[in-house]
Image 1 (cartoon, rainbow over the protein chains, first blue to last red):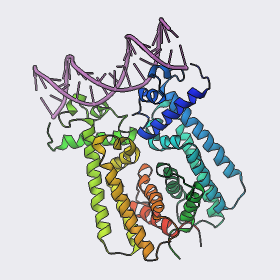
Image 2: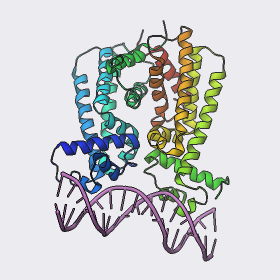
Image 3: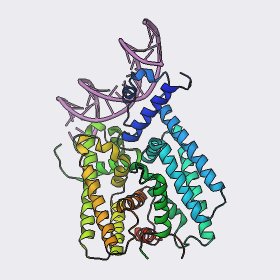
Image 4: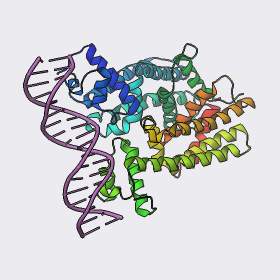
Length: 195
Length: 195
DNA sequence: GTCTATATAAAGATAGAC
DNA sequence: GTCTATCTTTATATAGAC
């Protein structure tokens, strides 16, 4: 099998990702994946050495994209409000580009991190946290963000609100991700009290 | 087996809940559960008719508690800000009382709702949404909450931020759930901009 | 109420023909 | 690159002795 690239391979990964996202990695069988593609389960092993290898590829390319986009946001020299907004936009763009991988990560991190092969997920989580904390703490330092709330708590609340949108958000013409990003930013920064 | 009550039964449920929460329902085997309790897997079937039955009991009693508490919040005749705060407090109290069940629900809804037996989870989700929407919409009607954000979007963002705290929040003396509830309320209502 | 033993089904994975 | 056929392991669950 070895690691060719090809349309078939991508087709398998796409089907696998959809199934992993919908039922969970552990509950998805190689037979179901093969059925989706229209081949027999044994044939999958011509393209991938194991079910875990499929998960690995899906999650790895997801994290790669995420890292790239976050780095770009952090590199820009912008004011705290813009930076927070850009971090939210970047996250939602990753959700849009990798909806299945995002859902797999959100639902199955606990399970996956217990498998040795996926130990690297722990670092990925730390990197994401670090990016958000940099933005939040810079905002506090510049007096733009309140200092009475723990940055780590803020990070976790915003992170879950933003990333879990993968479970329900379906962009439309009237309500595209740019609008969701603006609404998130406004909720977090301005609050929902009328004043 | 039939359905006695007893300490042993509870012990099994507790071990099962912890494992389901940590690895996911599908990835947890009856052998692991039995190991945790210190008996052999076959003996579990004296207490429960299946693995699904265990999940069912855990989730059902969780939802029962949740429903009771939400009803109490909605019954009170309070102002919108207090109501929203109380809904957040109620949610966090449920998280504290049923951490494993909460995590199972958050991680495995997708998987569980695909099993006929757990179809009732769909209704549970709708009831929760309805409670939050009532509070949000009353706030808008009374001019306390901004009207430029879609209530359903607000609900989903706040819901995920609040409920997913089960994954990271460990109450301490300095930072108990009452404090987290206040920080959530303040973040959502006032926002994190300094002004 | 738990054990021994085992039935039964489903899972991941492989070998070799085509 | 896929199929047929099958190995091996692991899972849920059951029966009956203790």
